Amino acid sequence: MNSCGPGAWTAPFVFSTAAKTCLALESTDVPKPITSNGTPTVESKIQVFAGGPISELKIKNFEGNHQFFKDLSASIISPGGKEVLLFDNKCGSYSGNFRLGFEDAAPNAFGCPPPQNGNPYRPEGLLSAFKGEDATGNWILRVKDKAISSGGQINGFAIEFCSDIALNPPVLIHNNALQLAPGSNAPLTTSLLLAEDANTAPGSLIFTLMSTPAQGELQRAWAGALNVGDQFSQADIDNGAIRYFDYGSGSPADQFRFSVSDGEGGLVADTFRIAPFALSADAPEATLDFFLAPNPTPGQVLLRLAEPLPANARVFLTNLAGQQLRSWQWNAGVQADVLDLTGLANGVYLVSVQSGKAVGIRKVVKQQ
Image (tube, rainbow, N blue to C red; front, side, top):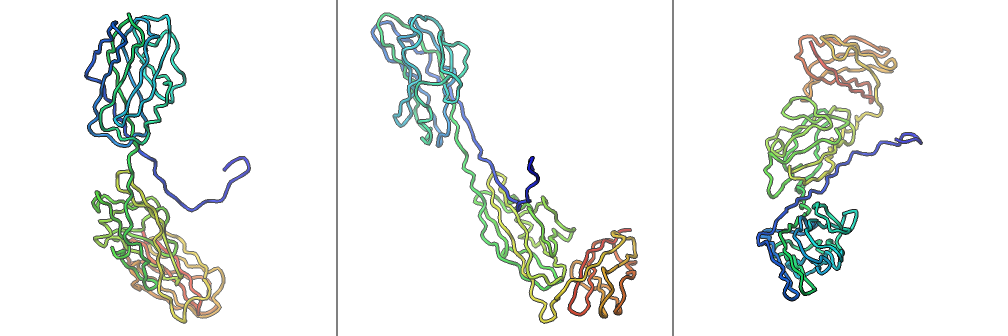
């Protein structure tokens, strides 16, 4: 919806976001002296024992001191031998301490004097060059002193690795249409709907309804209709607890949308279809429109048709299991009458009106 007006509703859909895990490791072989004799190269190493594909890498808390900071250059080297320059030939007149970090997304490169705040700055090379490499192995911080007669010390550094977690979705082994007679009910068996996940038990594979059937309803353990957002598990399907109840209108097809999640971010969505058997040659050719009031009702309910009956009709009251409980005969020309539901248990029932090849069906709630 925007200033131009509302748009049409889309079909329901589902999505998941990528998860990221990060690990920070500090060097343990410091301090490392930088002698004033010659032009030494000093290295500090961090060993990563269990890594993974890198999605992002940051250098943190690179700290130390040096006379004539301009003499230094620093780079980071991956276990695979790739080298990225962090800085070189910076701050010619500075002597003293430094403490800073490096990441590609930092807003600025560091200025002079060298920072001592530990904040991140952009490196001269791109740390994204390591993207996709396996983090496992030895990572080397290499610091070169390019001039004689000045020295210092490397006191530490840390590396933060981030990896995208692979979200492996459940697999739909079966998603086959349910067929049943109009007005009846049947369970969703594993031969019809079955999801599996390599490391998730059936009780933890969760189905979420994204839409509900239009010509019937879905129930869990005979406990009333499931609504959009309600959930059940693969274990419920395995145990025969999920049933579809057809309203008996003779509609050629029905369906509902669902998603399946494994509790670890894996997600899959699809449509389950219902195909009621045809009502034979007497299938309805028209729909009878009527309303029921009051609904819910404590006992009696008025059934009023949109127009008088053109021919004799039968009115049936059934439960959601498809069992006929009561029936009434109406003559042509009748438009309204009272149905007596006293003596029935509280719950949901179906009222159907059949006149020739015209049929209408509505739900009524008996509630004391």
